[in-house]
Length: 183
Image (cartoon, rainbow, N blue to C red; front, side, top):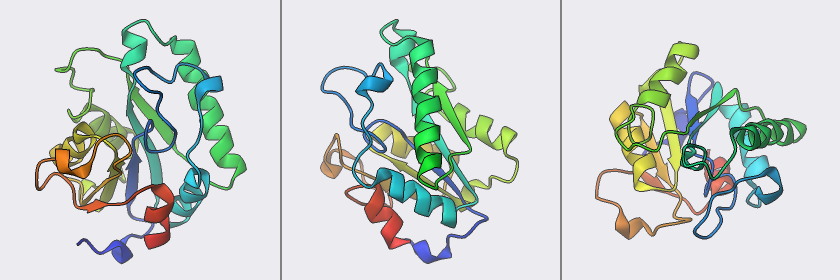
């Protein structure tokens, strides 16, 4: 098990969005702010992450936009409202990186590393060996591994941990607040 006590303000946190911060919808996308529902404890967890990490960033695939199911304007409104809600609860997400591409080979689509490399270009203080990735899919965990992050944390909100290959994750927690409380 990795030692979470080594985390300090020199560390970065990458968070996936759907299924990690907010509830996913069964067999469809979260298309509008009216459909967006934070998990219990998620805003409190992000507040704690803000106190512990130097940067908290969201890294999210949003293929619904590329497929024409979600409007870009609605995604941008969700992002804006998410940031406001987190801030009103004392947390801070420095930026949301999203990929709307539908092609699995897109360099920006997780598990490919494009969004992580883009984050590092915008925030040069990011060191992947001092970064934690929290996600709920195999693609999230592979993204972390492909970047070489120090700690990959899996939340089994969509898939059981048994569906993941060995070595792709370091820890499993039921939700964000459990991770925050373990720091």
